Image (tube, rainbow, N blue to C red; front, top):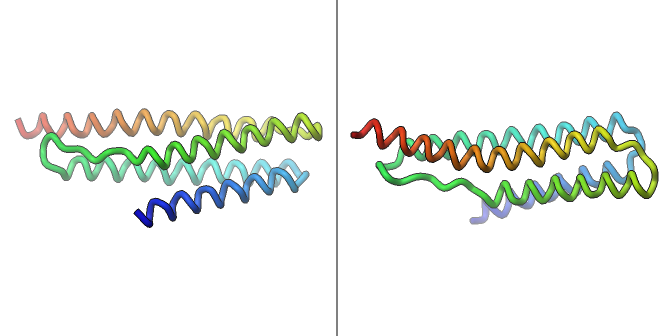
Length: 135
């Protein structure tokens, strides 16, 4: 349980860092680069999570599956939603151009939804595939 809390802690800390960069840095290239990197790293780690889950499902007995770690996806969805809201607010208050951030965080939000649905479906496919092999 401590590992899961630590993972969520680091995700929240990274989100706060990106939020601070968005708030305090006026250079749009820097903000876009940091935001794109954040989105990519979160996507990579959750993609690895899906692959690990499917591998664990294949190693379990027939009829059993490894449940997806939904808490990670929910926290990541919340992080992207908060950062997207921050971009809208800064754009409205200060008139800064935030189109690239809308793209980064909007794509990140959609990727998390796709990862959650895809992870559940892939896990079920791995479960069905294992069951079909044992018949």
